[in-house]
Image (cartoon, rainbow, N blue to C red; front, side, top):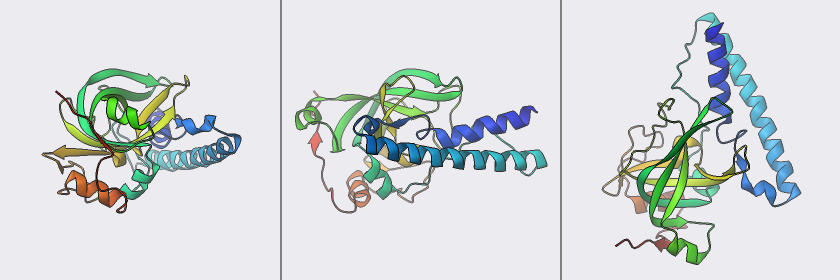
Length: 227
């Protein structure tokens, strides 16, 4: 019984993070968008239920074991993630802002992220040049984090593809597009992923973003000068 309950929890978690739980803040803009988001969410929930049923069946038969640190994130390539993102930035984690749970069992961490470069943005031009730090949300926290999507580390540099979403309290968040598909580790300005699902290791930051934008973006739209 406990195993089955765990399967249900993890199955729902892995498919609703960033979809059913968090919805696009664009839903406030017009009714048509609301209808589209609802239809998409309903479809995702149906898929989640199907996946949970399949997982429970495999667990019950002994074909598969459920680990608390495993999850399935949407399969999105870098081009799709770039297109979906509202903001694409390069920068460094300054500190952890807070850790918390949504719906009592879905973990998140908010990071204070120092922006070095904006490569795509829905902010006003003056904001791109003046906003030096953003609060960025990642799936997982210190109690429950995901093997496929390890938590960002303080003082480490990343490229992030971020989407504006609303949480259950109608608060706007900036969360990574499709979990690990929106977070890329940098080491001396070169992509250096421990889990390289998209074969991007070795690309420079500039090359990676130009490829992700399919050649549309080849330089940052704003660089933050730090003293």
